Length: 504
Image 1 (cartoon, helix red, strand yellow):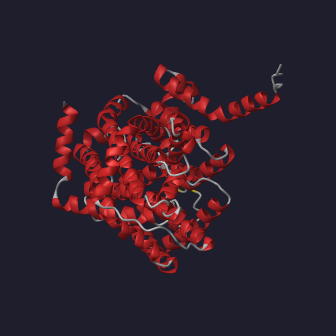
Image 2: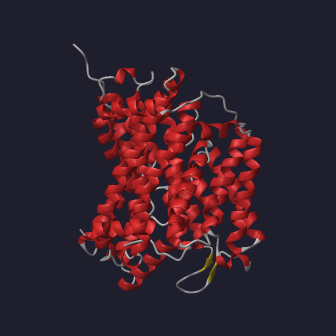
Image 3: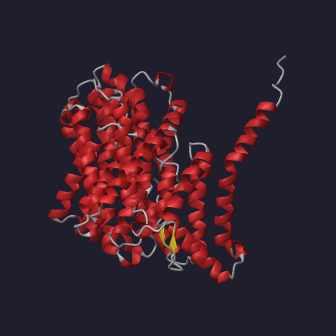
């Protein structure tokens, strides 16, 4: 009952005219970001984060989270109409969404995609509402060893469950740790890796790094690919929406499975993209129309969209309750919380109740607003793709530069942004993941502090990380995930070496 009362208080916080206006602006900006191929939710939030510096933290996080919801919705528009995934997790939507558009059923495909996205996000928000406070309450018992164990588990999860090769994930992570170490040592007060430069004493700012890595890096990649768009037109009217809504309840089992897959992949660092592919694959295998998948089946649109939104939303659960982001976008949001002076983690539910419950309430409202906006304004958002990329790209670069400059009002940050942009471009060309780098950059200092505090407590004895069942089980799970790629490779090699069974 306490959580329900707190949630109603959160609605009172979120339902102010100013916050509602920010919600609508955020969703609209998010859909535009989602429609532009490759820009993505994390990139958009990183670029627009400086706009929120002058806002109260609650209003700022409401706007940023609504940009996130909007980007999640927007990715489906280009997937269905142009066969171009606006987001990586929208790739699976193209398999059946674009064939539906070619058959003149674009309105049905988009209505199914938006509605199932809303259902996935709604289930994930309900889960956050009731589980996040319990996780946070449990985490209040944590000391430095437990916190380091959780950080260690997060890093190992990225290595063990990431879709990229473990070596590339570890290389990106090590670079993030090195960048996080630049500046003043918070324990001893000594300078590290500054090479005599006074500008480097404050270290690499997280925001400048993500604007460069995500925003500029993506623009450079898009310039090289020379984007041009040719797609189908879409018209959604109330009749199409109602007819599609009548069909959707028949896919309740697909939606339920996709919600479970999405929530699980969101809480673990699996992410929305693997969740959407996994959900599509499971639906294709289980459905009685599985053989027709890829020819324009509404169920083939429902499954990936439900899972992607459930994963994208549930990734905020570990960020709010433990201070550990479950996705790149959650990592950028976590960076925003730190900039506003808030400490994500279990104490957030105790010290900043208005903020936390205002954010959770805004998740409900933002998704409702997002569904209404995308259902009513699809042709308008699709028209953005008619604007030449040569006009859109310079505007985005200027916004990135303004955002980087406003962090410290320093020209050097713009040069750092460009440097990180080139690094982000190189990472993408070489297929190195950016998420582990960002994760290490955000959590590197905190993991180091927790480790050093644990060592001070135990006088250098590493067995403190196995001193009780809680920290021991977390560390054991982390070590299992760390060696999981080696185990999988060994298992595959053994199966490959086994003789094929003889027939007859």
